[in-house]
Amino acid sequence: MQKEAKLALEDGTILKGEGFGHSTIKTGEVVFATGMTGYVESLTDPSYKGQILMSTYPLQGNYGVSEDWFQSDGIKAEGFIVREQNPHPSHSLSEKNLSSFLEEYQVPGISKIDTRSLTLKIRKYGTMKGALATSQIEDEELLALAKNQPGIEEVDLVNKVSVTEPQIMGEEYKDRAVILDCGIKNNSINALLKRKVGVVLVPYKTPAQEILDFEPGALLVSSGPGDPTRVKDAIKTVRNLSERLPIFGICLGQQIISLAFGAKIYKMKFGHRGINQPVKDLETGKVSITSQNHGFTIDPESCKDLPIEVTQINLNDGSVEGIKHQELPISSVQYHPEAGPGPHDSDYYFDNFVENLKKY
Image (tube, rainbow, N blue to C red; front, side, top):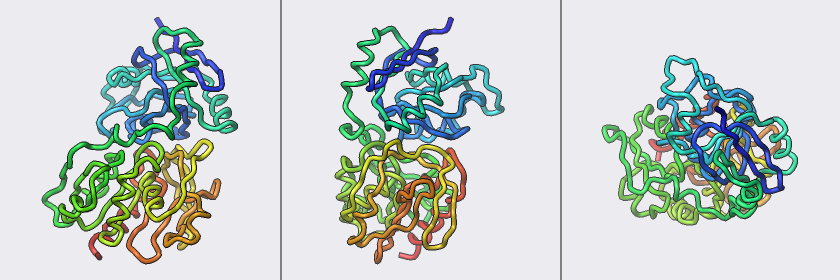
């Protein structure tokens, strides 16, 4: 027997569908992602912490779930909205179906939703606070939960996904990088390990001297969830290490680096979430198709009198996709070169990072 599920939005909308996954009630910012595949990677991406994820592609769950595709230790999204979920997946690596996956991590899912209509609403009005219920609750109570929750800008999310103690991987390798963990994805760690670079994963609050004690060749400031202006410890650490180490940033990491040098950040109307965002490199003219997941970005006007410059832009809306320091070996990108899910056009960026690590 199918259970009823409800999704309430802060504008007063209530959508009803069929529930799957765990029977519970969760709140979060409702966002959409456009990838045709990659639901396992997206649900386990720490950058989705605090958000209820909706897939614009109508069918989800058709190839099941495998731990090989995880980007963290489990689901980080607060809920999942789909048009249709397939309870009978077909894939040689599949270990369970989508509903069982959500049930395991106590996450609610709702299907039979007109995701096209909801996507158009978000594109018109912007991301909205929402509440998703797969257990019994009155409509008015669910609406109140959606409306009265704090906005994503008011919540400290990085501390919910960062490691609490340093973790060392690849000790056998001569070269070593420290990753300031704001919500790192497994693919980013693996991108360095496969290039024979050891990794020290440290909490996002780790001060500069403790990072230097690990004797790294470079620092990677990771991707992660929420408003970058709230991650003040990481901003301070980047500022203190800017003349000591090569620094590379991914997504939230780019925003943190930019803030460390005085740039301003703004919240986008509905952000970039998907695996087909076109990015142009202003120095080479090369265009790459990239994987993205972010709701904040750099104000390019604020960079004009700073020692950082814009190196890449998004060809859909002109937003900033890459920056570099004019003198120091510091650069970053707003997209996800490690993919997971998505294309590997920009995988070369890890080669650049390792080159800088060895050079300096």
